[in-house]
Structures are given as C-alpha cells and as structure tokens.
Image 1: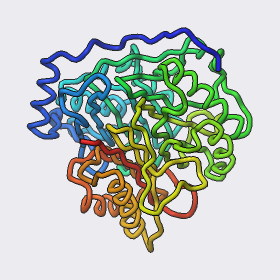
Image 2 (image 1 turned 90 degrees about the vertical axis):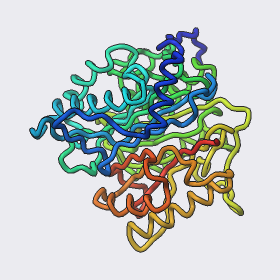
Image 3 (image 1 turned 180 degrees about the horizontal axis):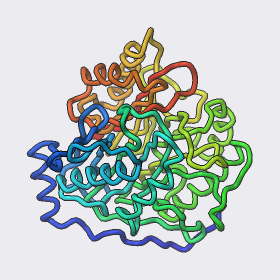
Length: 407
C-alpha cells in the first residue's frame, strides 16, 4: 500500500466541561426530544432514540458516542411535505434538535446513514444536505431502501460525539465530490464512509465484476486506515450493501483477502440500491484500536465459512454481526435471532441491557411492526433502533445487528 503523509484535520476542540455537564444533565432528564410546534416527525417506530454510550468522564481513547436512529419528517406545521427537498430539510432540522438536546451540534456528527425511497432523489437530497454540512461533513453511506414510514422519502440514522475528532483525508485519495469525509476518528474509534469502487487519484468509477470492485473498495478503505495509523486488523464492524444479493459469494471471495482470518470484523451483508449504476458493492466500516480485541463465540461455536466473526470485543464495546435464524414467520425469525444474539452477548459477559444500538434489516418492511414488538419484549425501551427494508442474502426475512458497551 502506498504510504501517504498524515493529513488529519482537527475537526473540533475537545468538549468543554460545560458541554459535558449539559450532556450529563440531559442524560439524567431522559431521551426527550424538543419538537417545533405544529410539526410531526415520524421517527421509525414512532420514536426517536438517543443514548450516551459512555459516561461524561470518558477518556479520549474511549469517546462518548450518541446514536440517533430512524429520523424522518413528513409534515411541518400541519402541512404535508411531499418533496424530497422539503423532507430532507425537515429531517435534518429534527436531527439538529436531537443533537441540541444533548448539548451537541451538526459538527459533532461523525457518521450518517441515509436511506432514500428512490435513488433518483439522490442529487436533490444532496443539494439540501450540503447546506447543513458545508465543512468537514461526517462519513456517510446512502442507499435506496424501503422505509417503515410509507410517507417518508428519506430516513437518516447518525452517530455523534462530544469528543475531539479528526477528519482523516489521505493525501493519495482524491477528496470526495459529494458531501462526506472519507474517515473521522474519535479517540481509538474510526468511522469510515461507505466506500465504492473509485480510482483514488481521479475519484472516477472503477468498473468491473464484483470481485474487482470489492478489491478496489478495500484498497480505498486501507488508505483511510493507514492515514489513521490503523490497518485491516483493526476493523471491528462492516456493513456490505450489494446491488444484487446473488453477488454475495463472489464478493466474499475478494472480501476475505483483506480481513484477518482468525478474527475478521463483525458484518451484515444485505441488498441496498446504490446511488451510481456503475457500482455493485458499497462497504461501510468502523475500526477500533485495542490490545484486548478478541472474537466472541457462543458455547460450542466455531468461526464459520463466511469471513466474519459473530462478534468482536475490544474491551470497551462488543460489535455483533447481523444475525438471522429460521422461524415460521417474521415473529418466529425475530425470536430465534434474538436468542442467538442473547447467547453471544452472554458469552461476552453482557446482556440486552448493555445494547446501545440495534439495526433491523427486513426483506419485507411490512414486518417492521411485528419485529419491533418482539424486540421491545427483550431490549430496554429507548434503545436506538434503525429499521430499513434491505433484502437479505438467502430466503430469510429478518436480520438483526447490535452494538453493546462494556460498562
């Protein structure tokens, strides 16, 4: 890999004591969200979930992370919002309110996931989005998905932190023309933007089959890791969005060339409509440097044939793979999947009470209500939960991915 001269821009100063005090005070008040009078924000399963992962005294190496999940906005002041421009602005306004409730601002967002009902809305969404993130924008992945709110055209989930952060901009990797940063580091945690097959020197698409594109994707991810002083062995969790789930096997062939064989990162792989027809795969990752890294296996479990670990613990957090299990229907699949997740958490000495972020991938988004009801029986109320219609690899319809914190 080409060695690049460090080019890390300081994104913001270390959070002040006042900021941390406001965040701690808000945590004691609970996860309430201020809303503009007369506005209705549909937030996934009718709720916006916020959670501080670590106490306000966390060190720079173990930064506080705030998850904000499933934000949508379909009306304002009693009027329906019918264009993607209107909904994007209202959704980002709702995000701003949620951030302010934690003593944070847009500049504190480190990662975004944007789900569009129609990929043709991509440019219009970006036109509004740029106005909110004009400088040092967060890392981002954008895919087309079915949304639980039938009136929503755009849905977002975000990760923010009051900790000091750095934008990671490798000198050998062309700056993205779109409003996102390649990487943002907070302490020992590095968020990497959804990477597609782009030439590092020109930003132009590198076409080819999915193996060719996957190798180019990891080449670009590797440049971000290197610039941040990390390598592929520090990857803890990835999300793989495939244009066609039938490409899964060929993608895996190339994917396993880059991840460590003995402790590959946790992973979820689903179909997500990509924004450029030239691309077949997009991969979004998180890395965390840790001397305590290890694979978490349930009793009697061994690593499978796919290049992923059921979970990776870093001593600070446990990053779980997207899991799925057979059932007679969506409810049965959800219960069986949660049983596997519970067993994996217990192998790490944790439980559902330690879960701080949940992702639910559904082949049929109409199953969202059923799955969320099952989830509510087991996971504490208020746990941040992202739900999206992103078809799974194979015949099952429910996949659930989690992150937990070691308290």
